[in-house]
Length: 212
Image (cartoon, rainbow, N blue to C red; front, side):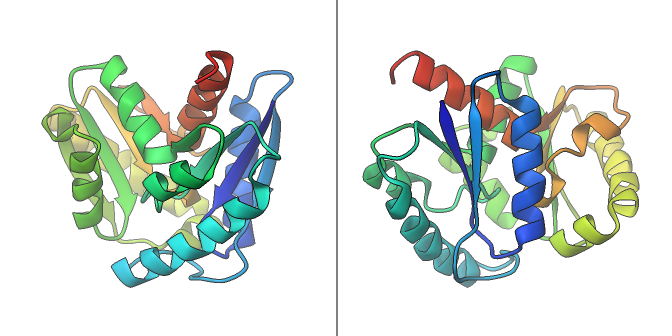
């Protein structure tokens, strides 16, 4: 099974981090194929950058149509998810959608922590129909680039945020950000931590296995 892990920003270090997390989650026999768009933002922090990233991502996917068995969108905004599903002849899984769906099976309500602003994530959870399952949402004062350059600092901030989310009723916590991929295993938490890349890879494998 060939799974394309498609970043939507142009930062190769984030693509590499997502690929590493995807390979750690993948079953034997699943090949992870990382890809980075040719243009767009180094990190997506505005609505305008997200629209540009959608264009870049769809161009990248169109080049891979028919060559892969599933696609994981390695972008926590689930950028261009519906459009990607229109052009790809295989399952397309958004990393945050996947984490939210798995979180609903891990407990009654979930929390989500991300980097920067939270407004678009609240909207994203609502678009997936899961607002009533969202216990709390937090944005950390850090950038994706800082998560790559100084992961220990960001991990410490994450643990503090997770504790606050649990105190607000979260039965599990989603790490919302491609730059946070792979960090869950290094954090201490009283509830399950959900890595969107890992969740998306597992759901992609399941959908291919079910011929969906």
